[in-house]
Amino acid sequence: MKDPTAIIDAKAVLADDVVVGPYAVIGPDIEIDSGTTIGPHSVIRGPTRIGKDNKIFQFTSIGEAPQDKKYAEEVTRLEIGDRNVIREYCTMHRGTIQDQSVTRVGSDGLFMAYTHIAHDCVIGNHVIMANGASLAGHVYLEDHVILGGFTLVHQFTKLGRHGFSAMGSVISRDVPPYVMVGGRPTKPYGINNVGLERSGFSVESIRDIRMAYKTLYKSGLKMDEAIQTLREMAQDKAVIRPLIDFLERSERGILR
Figure (tube, rainbow, N blue to C red):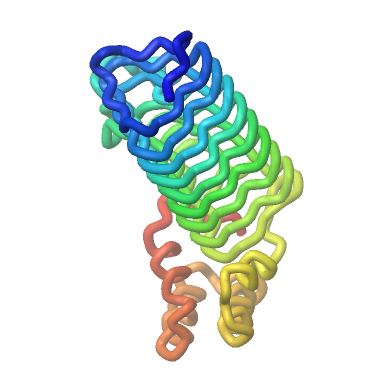
């Protein structure tokens, strides 16, 4: 159902069952797959592709041009997966040619009111951003990351899978998988124990992750020494492998 007051460009491609609310504006070069709902007064610009069964609430701005002074109207895009909930006043911008020309949002995410995803961000699956959390450009969130309300993430920063930030965190260095951060200045405060339990991690796996955290943060080892120790631990503790891979790829250095 498309409300008669909605403005939908003739070049937009919407599945037959897409619901578009009153006064929504959908521009050209938009693809919206089946089961998705677009709330009243939403504005969607493209090129943008939105997958299946997304719920986009009123007053959102999706696929707008990036807030980057280098942007010169090049053709870039935004890609959104399936089953996301995108709440009021959420903003998601397209990419820039200085990166991969695309901003990517995975599936099964919850993006609460006033959250912002800037250009060239890559967002994994099952990500939660609480009210007011904001990502600068080129941020990478792996699967199951949870950002507390009004968390701010600096450009080019990466957060590993199952990471967690407390309300009001300011993150300017990479956050390894499983780690919980918070405070001002923001620093690590242990592992995301509750999130791991909710995701079905076994007691043994959580114990191994806690041991790895202590090796990285409490042992006094230098980074290369800690990584080597973790490699030895990972030989019979596979849950530690994602942590090692993340540390080896980190370019900004980690919060430590």
